[in-house]
Image (cartoon, rainbow, N blue to C red; front, side, top):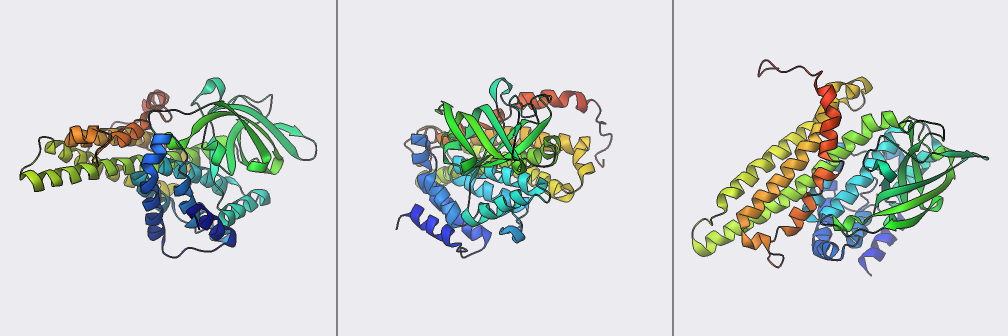
Length: 402
């Protein structure tokens, strides 16, 4: 039986896979790594990896046990992203984006029975959720929506939005999208809507032939939806954005980028060890490996600290809204993206021409192309500009003990 058919059979039967989360993640990572070159070369969805993700029942790991999940903390989810990022950046990023949407629903659905049932289905059927937050002229400004929710008779809502990007939209089982609360609402007065495939249609606006992250298939679409009003999350998007969307995105994206950096560093290490076995001395680029290792350790330490801090205060709205936390979590994204890119570049220089070539076992070209997406996924310059004014309110430390 083909891998995809095996996955569908196991998922349909609700069969729990053997092994702990680490073992199951390793099994998926092995499949993802096997097909990573083909995914990148053809700019195609990593179908084999996600057949394995579903077979290992990883899509619902953070959902509560009462709804069929495993109640995995974000630190566990981040580690899965890290491992998948090492194997195939597109697989890791798709998994991260799905988990960000799951976190938003899980943490902000309240007692909404429709959304609870959606999460039950997600766990039982291993449904993959895509994200739609970029739109029209607003681009990456996800705190502004053009298209409004329209309320209809019979407790229905409709939505039509021109989404400049819906990553893996054609392959997802659902889409979680932002929208204006109503036609007369301000662009920043937003809601989050959870849709399943039967609730919407997608009409392609543009394709996806990108430098890296080619397997995310981040095409543009016109999304037309007709759904139950109960599929609109009850909390204002402003709260969802601050308490869950931003922290989860920056931590899980950062975990994927760290995985890419770790994979590149491992290739540089293998190259140098091989050179020493055959030549008896360090190659010229060896000092760059030391720098790659140092920046990777800095990156992992910073990300681990940010994850722990979020876990400590994630259920305290006041702490999440505090300027120091919002600044910290936002700068985590900026620093993680830049450190990851720096690490991969050091690894490339450590391997020299062998890392630069696409036909070498030590090639780092794919890793470099993938990681270069990190500073422009919500552009770092936009983030820093948004932080400029509140940063003026922050006290400057006067002691190393502060």
